[in-house]
Image (cartoon, rainbow, N blue to C red; front, side, top):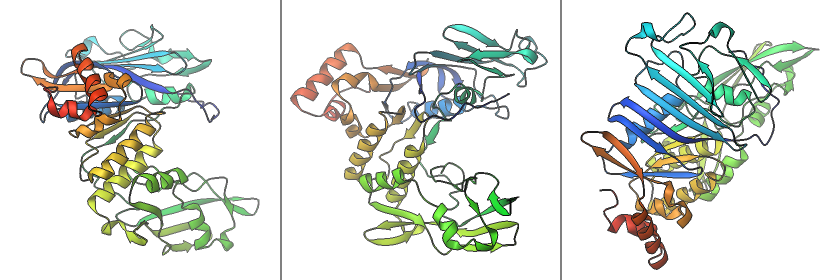
Length: 405
């Protein structure tokens, strides 16, 4: 892919997932459902396939050349805040010989892309060595869609990143949080000074929510100190503010006991680790409760995300009062982001207004059709509104009805 990234702007148009059609993954045999912008809530009994759906969605949006093809078919319908539509269609072919040409790097996977209803890429027929897509006055040559759609959106000037997927459990590896981390600043000689050659990413796996050292920060090797380093190792202000508002964590910082090694060419920073302020005390990650850890993970990750957010059961391990705060946070974040959560907590529905009842997706398992999803029916919407008007809480409708049947 040839990328000439456009100039960054503070207000890019946003991309939203409107509809999906999925086939052939675990309990999902053939499923179609549409989404709303904002907060979407999946409900359904255990074993209905909510987690399978989340995994399928995450993996297909982020599929790349190295991914094994684990599904039969996926169609993702997107729209943008500036009124364009995009459809990505991937289909696994049983007979790969009928589906590939010299330039298709995944044998047996048909890939199609539609922009505003026009087919602009089809790897079953196009001469991909010369395939150039011209959109938004920006040309780009591609040889495949899967895994590149996010890059295409960014290239065309949209605000969209790979989806964030928060599962039941925290990631196994949280370097710089549960274990100390090390970064090496590669320095270049520039007019007698030394400059960071590139932006350093020092959060591992899915914790991407912290500012990194910038190539604009020029330092003299002979003068660099621990204080210089700590001045750059800062958590984003927005994350700190959201932690204060929605969790028992009132502050977070990098531990000052870092080690600094300087050989005149490179700077190695060792023993980098976060600590958290709770009840007036600074504590390491190991001393936080499971609930506090999950709260930090959700708040930090969602705050930092700019793409689709998928969260499995945000209520797990969290006190009911804290869960109310988390739902307040997610509702607020959904004003500028598209969020899909699965939940067994009826109180999650109380964040929806009468105009947002179509944001509820009921999941069930059909013995013949596999996992299925649906929106509330007309009669159910009428009953839900009555509960909201007379009782005051949509959660009571879920608790006292046969909504999931």
